[in-house]
Each structure stands twice: as C-alpha cells, then as structure tokens.
Amino acid sequence: MNEVEVALPSGITYPVIIGNGALDRLPSVIPKASNRAAIVTQSKIGITVEPEIENKVFEIDDGEGAKSLTTIGELCSAFASWGLTRSDVVIGVGGGVVTDVAGFAAATYHRGIPVIHIATTLLAQIDAAVGGKTGVNLPEGKNLVGSFWQPTAVICDIDALDTLPERELRSGMGELAKYHFLTGDPLIEMELKDRISRAVEIKAGIVAQDEKEQGKRALLNYGHTLGHAIENIGNYEIKHGEAVAIGLVYAAELAYNLERIDHERVLEHRQVIESYGLPSALPVSMSDEDLLFAMTRDKKAVEGFTFVLDGPNGLEIVKDIEEILVRETLKKVR
Ligand code: GLY
Image 1 (tube, helix red, strand yellow):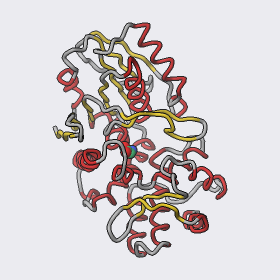
Image 2 (cartoon, rainbow, N blue to C red):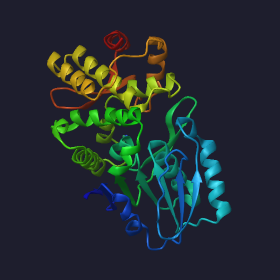
Image 3 (cartoon, rainbow, N blue to C red):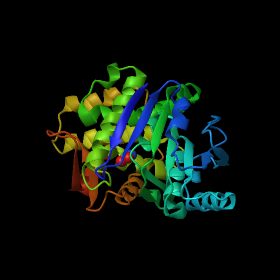
C-alpha cells in the first residue's frame, strides 16, 4: 500500500492511501469523535463501504447535472432530517462529481463537518479527491460556486478501477497526461499504481505550497482553460479528461505560437495524448465564438485570456494573451 501525506501550510496533514484493497483502511481513518457517517454516493458506483459506525447512504444523481446548488440543498436537508451533527463525518464514495458535491455539502453543513473521500475513478484518485477543492456548477460555467475544504483522509482503492467503463478510465488518463508536463517525470514507464501515487505526490507538493490557489496551484489547471470551455459548450457530454486532452494540445500549440516552446515539445504533448488514446481535436460542432466566450468566463481569466503555458522555465500562468492569437490557434485543434 502506498501512502502520500498532504501537508498544508496551516499545519494540517492528511493521508492519501493508494493500493489494491485500500478500502479496508476506512475504519482506521474515521475521526474518533464521529458517531455517524453520511455516505454520499451514486447508484451506479455499487461500492459498499463499512465505516464500522452508524451510517446511512445518501444517493445523488449521475453526471455533471448533479453538481448543482439544488443537490447541495437536498443533501443538507437530508443530513438535517437524519440528525447529522458537526462531530459526525461525511464519506463521499465515487468520482469527481461525488467528491465535489460531498465535499461542498460537508464544507457548508453546520458551517463545516469532516469529510473522507473514497475515490473510485482514476480522475478522482489523481485529482478531484485530493487537495480540498469542492464545488458545484452554475448554468454559466463549471465549478463557479465552491470552497476549499480539506478531507480528513482520501482512499484510492485501485481495485475500484477494474469496474470502470473504458471511456471513464480513458478520461482519467487526460488528467494524468497533465502530470507528464508538470515535472517531466517518466510517468509513462510506471505501473498504474505508482503512476497514481506519483501524480498524487506531485499534486500534494503543489497544494502544500499554495492551498488556496493564490499562485502555483493554478498550474494544476494546465489544459483546463479550453478544456472547461469544451465541457460547458458540449453540455458535459464530452468527458472532463477528454476535454483536458484537447486543451493540453491546444495549450502546447499556443505556447508554440508565442515562441515559448519548440515544435518537438508540441509533438511530445501530442504523443502523450495519443498514447492514452485520447482526442486531440475539437468537436466540429463547436464554434470559435462560443469557445472564446466560454474561455473568458473561466475563473482564471481575471486579466483577458489567461492560460497555463509551457515555456523555457516550465509551466507558467500567462495573462492577457491577444484574442487574435487565441482564435488563430484554435485552427491547430480543428
Ligand atoms: N484540479 C485542480 C486543483 O485541485 O487545483
């Protein structure tokens, strides 16, 4: 079993437990003061957890549509009807939708109660469940309402990935692809368990320096500016990792157009995406206008078009990129 510690600037630490059968470690990470556990999951997840304290399952709907303020309201009402208290615990069992919703409900219910994430998708294991980002979508964009609420522990049971639909697993690879460019580690050569552990370590290292995304943490959004726009315009029918994959190729092409990287580095991006069997071209139905508009609404777009871009010093946040260049570069992913 691998264990990565997330150590926050505030002094708070928590474990991310990664391996086959990691689920068995759940009772050991339940806070001592908790008498009850509210288990938030979806019917499709089909994973039973045994926290060894009184518990009740609260199911939410599938898909990004469930990441809404309505779901949060319903969940918190259900917690209140059951009598969940501030010393109890929420356990989110599922992928990014579940961990975002369970985390945000935990962050706001009674002004905050402990949450444990049991990440059952690759995407959640290497990203969503780790680092305390929680939140829901608005019709205007993805993750526009939320809070930072760190979990007490994260459990990544590799066995859970066996039952994942192929497209879901591949989508997780899109998020994994971004880690190739964050440090230059030879991730492609590693076993999946070690690759997941390394991705968690990379993320933990960044979150340790910048918990609330005042700077460096934004680098974890590599490929996400266009990625979020694609997801939003496509009504979330394009999976997050698929959208991020296209976003990574686009970001590499944009960095090339800005003379920050050479052609070989662009090819490296394309090769990683291809090796994971992910798309590198935009759906034909998406217009430049819609994509540009959606990108200006991105949370990072405080100063014009803002992207995380590769360059001679590695990844950096680049602000105020000219619209014409952003528009022209879209042709490279058509
Ligand atoms: N998903 C990016 C982050 O957690 O900061």
